Amino acid sequence: MKKIILIIFIYFGIITNINAEVKRIVSGQENAKITIIAYESLTCSHCADFHKNIYPKLKKDFLDTGIAKIEFRHFPLDVAALNAAKIAQCKNNESLKILESLYLNQQAWIKGNSVEDLNNHLKNYLEKGGFDINFEKCIKNKEIEDFVLNDRIEGVKKFKVNATPTIIINNEKFEKSLNYKNLKKKIEKLL
Image (cartoon, rainbow, N blue to C red; front, side):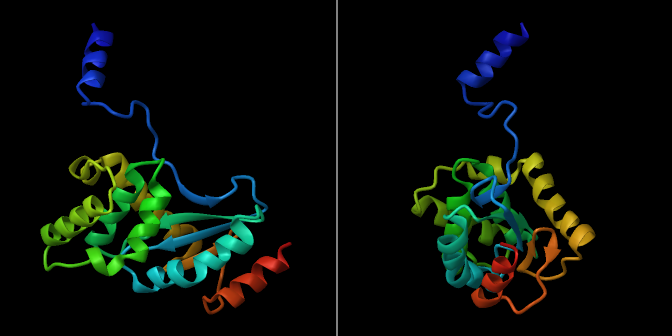
């Protein structure tokens, strides 16, 4: 009987990802020598600047070459960032693409005076961008919400993160001014 009910749920799309786990958003090769962790908030302008001006160079020189990988961790500073993080985490196969799009086009969706306004702008942005996401399901997903909030908790406890973006390289907090030149020097010292 349980199998029949499960088949009915799958058939009607009530359950779309059985045993689907929330996965870390990573750019680069999994077995890279250097692991960079970026604690970010999707509404943080400095984080958006990192994605526009530093990440492409980092990707070209270190991620695409297999030297390093970057794990994007969530550190939402407000409800809009929390909801956007839940959306980014909602589709494992498109999470990096969604995350990058949200940072590169931050001003297109961060609008409104209430959570409802912000959510509507985010939803409209995703629809116009061609992202096939069940917005309500993603926003209400407790497993994803816990995953996002646990990133923030771990950042505070393990690395004393108190601002975004905060960069961790091989489990050591990057304390210099966040620009490509300083990041490159640090990574090259680890090679």
